[in-house]
Image 1 (cartoon, helix red, strand yellow):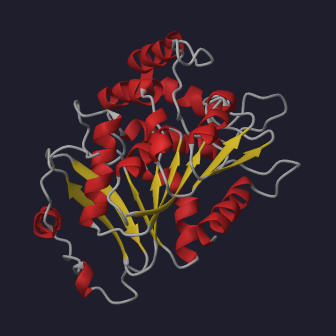
Image 2: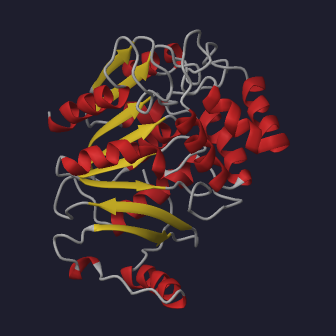
Length: 327
């Protein structure tokens, strides 16, 4: 299967866009990737896709190291992976994360906010950066993006995949998926976003996303503020459209088509993407899947702070990710 017709983006076009900006600001023009010394291997870049959308991405670490590519959840950005990117960078990997179109620092698109286009954007990014044998790690909506991309990726592009608190196979309640969430739940998301996006983006991380609404939970204001910051940086139209993309897209055939090893990680107290209708079903559709669950942990488990069971949740999740990547 293919992602549809795409025009290859040249490195020259990408560099010219950035060069114009830095010259206008009176800043020094950075060296190209081929001119960087070993110590100058961290950069932030813009990819212009074939439909003219500018995608922001981070690309850190040695260019000859195995790539680990991170895909963020709704309505966030690549910044949600700060901890994991620094961790895998320290382990010697090349780490990459992009802001999905309409999110973060990428263009605030009013069209193309669907899973096929998201996956096509990833395919263009992988081709532009010449990513081979990559590990793709996706959280929530990003897990759906990973599933669609990996199922259709060119041979040799992908070595393994990880889905964390991910939306596949499908979140919506349908005749084929009677255990799913009613459409009214997602209509509520849309209504709240349209009515007062700023307040909605405080309520979600203050409550179910990190499990701060559970009895005895101690909310972390820094996490809440950072979630809000990332969400408000994106475009309201794209985020509105993405609700349908993450809730109504059926990834059943994508999961069946994936042949590389896949690790599913899911919190057993995930209130956003309930485990019974996601990971427990997805594992049965994968040819080469492994499921690991975490008692008491929330949807945003790779960012939350210590409790009486775990030392720190990012440390635990990172160790499990590293074990899988190295296996």
